[in-house]
Length: 275
Image (tube, rainbow, N blue to C red; front, side, top):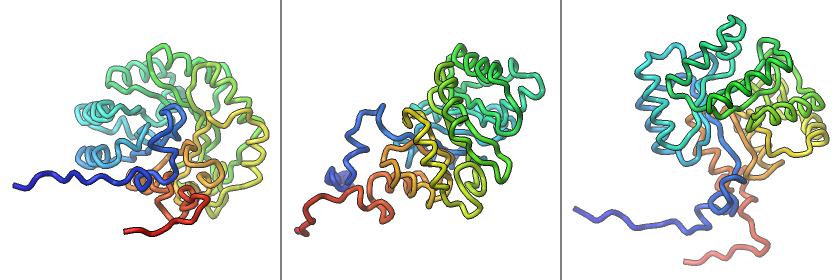
């Protein structure tokens, strides 16, 4: 039997950007994965391969209620064992609110072992008072609370001024981050146009309104969107609705290990090739 390899990549090759491996955890860009129904084996494989590069897993939409309870608990347990936040989709909480079952929703997700929630009103309308109450309820239950701003209807746009106001209130109520809506498609909604391209003027307006962008997580399911936001904000921008199969590819982009962001690893002096 041969000994296990002791080969180790040079630290610069592992992170040419210099921002990912050696920045304090609180300053690292977060990655939120959307799980639309991968099986237990695939989920375990995701965590084994890409767990270190994931921060939050969202069981998309209302899929959480469709799992056999023992399987759902196992997925939640696996995620938490890897130190991750795992939560049901915001649409499920919206459904509970619409059906006047918010209390039952909170009871059940806590019993199942979820450690996070997403408070959103992408489909329904929530008053400011209701939104604040849901955030505070989540915090009181010991849950990590993310909120989401924006509507899911095709053609809906982001109002930069309203986003800034909503973010201030959400953070004051106890939310950790505010996610900017783009759905799982990233097409013709929120920040993105009908071709999936970023509306640059909207970003400029958001930056002009927001005193800090550290609280924003941008839903960016498409590679072109991830690359654009990384180029605009740097390796440590928070990105959400990442497909499980794209986690390593995104982390490579964050580090300058992909042509789209190769400049992240460039030095002032040209590289010299050595053997």
